[in-house]
Length: 367
Image (cartoon, rainbow, N blue to C red; front, top):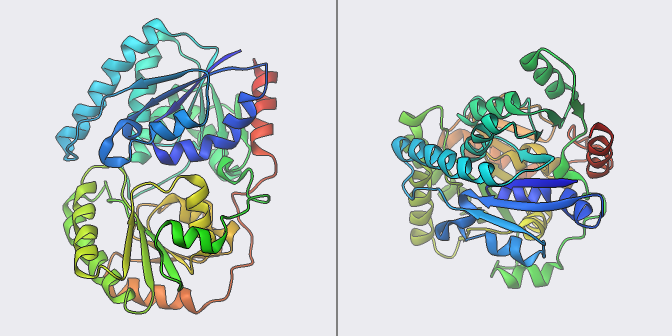
């Protein structure tokens, strides 16, 4: 069975990994990686090199991102991605193509495949992120897909409502948590030395723009800067840099100012990679920001999360999440509250056993 894997960023590739590893060793599948988006961006770590190191037989690369991140550039990148994938789908055929999440580049690649009758399997559909325009892209991908692997029963019901049918829709749990029970973090001393983290507690921070509130992002970024400056007086701050979203550079510039002004209290990481990121989550005191990993994965590491603003609003949450506004005092207060808690020992609503095996079983039975 010839299978294509669409991956447009470090984030979706890390989620895919348990599935890719199993498919790579299963003779039933002839798997090809289709890498595009920020994987080919030097300013985002050129992460296609990490994919190459994982030893796949076939990796296709498609470059279509424009470097600027204003609304016009994002729309132009979307159009260019459609054009590039029109050529790709015209010359490459698959029995099934996996797509994941809600990125605009992923939506563009999928939309280009509709006239060619590409059979898509969508992972993480049915979710809601009211503070991000990705909500629209995700539903576009769902409408174009034939198989759907959702992370919770609630999201399965949303996909059913969207499509008007339950056919081909499966609640399997979050793929990124597939190996979480057996995950072993990098040795603490080795990890801290590798990234020059001082031998003290730290918070793990990831902020992305609220793409449904473009007029507010300059103010939000400044509130974030003020809050993190205050928080850094009490605890070291490790920041993973924003994705290539509309106005992502607004946050990047402010984060770089923080590093310049408080160089000994901040560490900026462009791309951790999955093992390093999970290790960072394991050793962090808490998480702060508006990234999906705080909602999907942090509970499995026993971490409390300060979820800021509306970007993740609408996603089902475990009991480890503290929600606050994009306002300095609220962020600082919520962070202090989260840091006062002991380890979170509750349930992660996104966890199910053997997600990758479940997906493979369904694919084999469906096709």
